Image (cartoon, rainbow, N blue to C red; front, side):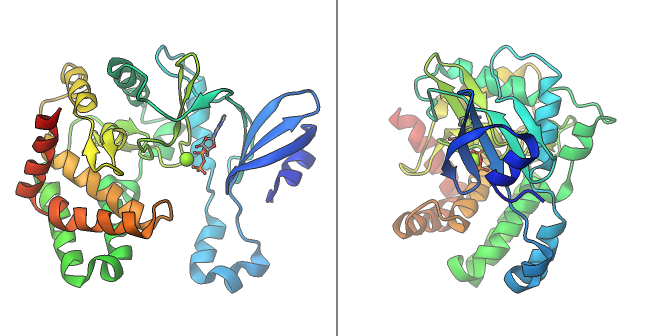
Length: 317
Ligand SMILES: Nc1ncnc2c1ncn2[C@@H]1O[C@H](COP(=O)(O)OP(=O)(O)O)[C@@H](O)[C@H]1O
Ligand SMILES: [Mg+2]
């Protein structure tokens, strides 16, 4: 079982001479030949400390294969050529706990300098990868438990009672059910990245090439197909949304998609999912988390308030 950079080195003799941590799971490594690598490791507990540290959840975690999805999706992407985006090539993996990637140099995580049309084109090109039901990709990416609505409810149940209060938790679950009714399932499933944020999980190089990264959550979705674009458009720190991005996206998918998308319902559920996700995480300060909780209570859980909030942003532009 691979648990550290040293284990990866032993397995592949990459000649790593130094490395530094990028995030708790990812490392930037340099090899003796001057090559730069990005190594992602998701540790699984050993049998010994399994129950001690994690209890039943630990057992589930032990059985899971955290990076399998990311590796398989990367494999599938390698089979095609894309005009509008790229992705870091995978050099080694065990389809489970580690991936060694090429390192993308001179990049940032900011789409603001990229033309809206280009962002949308890249995203749609990624999302419309054809998914044959017989492929590994289909088996890997189709899963009810990961659907947007189920994962939103899961998130609400986990944080709700403590952070939102019981009454709000119940009304949040009710709202999700209502929104599910409003947005009918679409005919065709789309591959969604599902883990974008305004400043996460893509890279933009100095020469403005877009790389998509971090496919751990990528899945086929038949209902909430605006997830990625809404996630990218939401600026949680300023509580605003980039309407240009969303308008351009709707314009582009208009020709290829059926017309039954409920814009406000899509945006509201997708923001609720992300808001819950942010509160669960450690990314934001307590102050910011409080603000997000208020946004859930005052805006997201009421269709009318949400509509006002959404269009007020449009007027300001
Ligand atoms: N191939 C790469 N080249 C350069 N930087 C990368 C590469 N892959 C990831 N990163 C950097 O590492 C960070 C974490 O990688 P990511 O795959 O998103 O892992 P996590 O699951 O921890 O979010 C990214 O936000 C990005 O800054
Ligand atoms: Mg990430």
